[in-house]
Amino acid sequence: MSAQSKSHLHRTAFAALLVLATACATGEPNLSRPPSAQHQLLLELPCRGGVALAPDGTRVATSNGWALEVRAVPGGTKLARHELRLGADAVSGACVAWSPDGRWLGGSARGGRSVVVVEAQTEGAPARRVDLAHGRATVLAFAHASGELTVGTDQGFLERFDAATGAGRGSIALAPNSAQGPLPVAFAAWTGRDELLLASAGKGGLAAFEPQDGARAWERLDERPLALDATGTRLVTASMDRAEARGIDLADPRSPRVLATVRDPAGDGRPELAAWCGTEGRLAIAFTRSFVLARWLDAEFFTLERTAEGSAALAHAGGVRIGAPAMIAGDGTGRWLAVGASDGASVYDLDGWFRASR
Image (tube, one colour):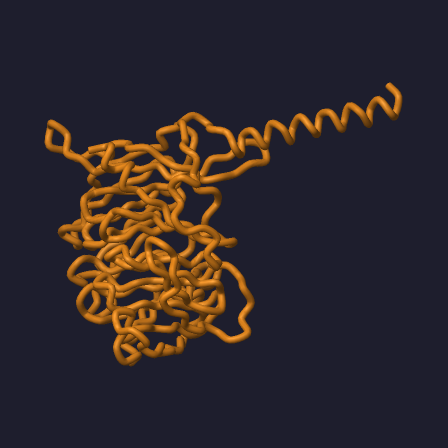
């Protein structure tokens, strides 16, 4: 075969591969998907991964790496802007969190050694900057009733503060001395009446800590936590092999039990992200799917229902293509789903999905 023929063959094969990869990236794997744009209310908001919805569903907060912005939902009108770190690079990995009662809003730039805390229900309230002692912020979590802000750091610590004053309340060493060195805190959340602080470091494992002395109440080493609901009583996790997602009942936070398990409805994905949508057992789980050169996530919607035998099950209620986000977040009303990626944020209207599944 001549060099020209070989070159033509290579170009043809490469073109076919691109066509196949593009088809897989934009087509439907096994489940039908509606056009995503029909469900997006806010498009291309300045965001570098950090996004959170207020519990009442009226506001969305995003971080673009150097500022924390609050916008109205729906509509996207800018309501407030707070500087996170002057001169910071617009890099992904920013942290954003609302308190369960909607009073407090916290944010940090990626790599930031401080957290900005704002009394979000007071118009024009100044932001307070809280400095960290053990590394850079990786995750934020507000308690339900005790007024505490917990900050997970890249050095494996949980630093605790009074949200109103910024005064320190001590710290918990989660994973500062692992065999691989310090493991960054990847997840933190408080159970419903602030009985326990849940946390995870690195890529998996879940520990529950007593708030008074930081002692470990229990551990679940075979699971990676994904999301705790607004009431602090239901947790969704991924098994360590990511073959299934599990709904965990924390009504008795010191005796967690599995409510239900679910696998990808398409049969080929792994649970990567999750968000509880409201307080009625509505759940969005983002499954990773890939083929050849393409990788994307589909958000599958489920409702937690009781079976005829009295056990619980996660019933599938549809889904939507969401690309490759860094995080997803729901609100307390169950109406919206926020998606934060390295190049922007979107808010999806979920009302039609879950209404149709009732």
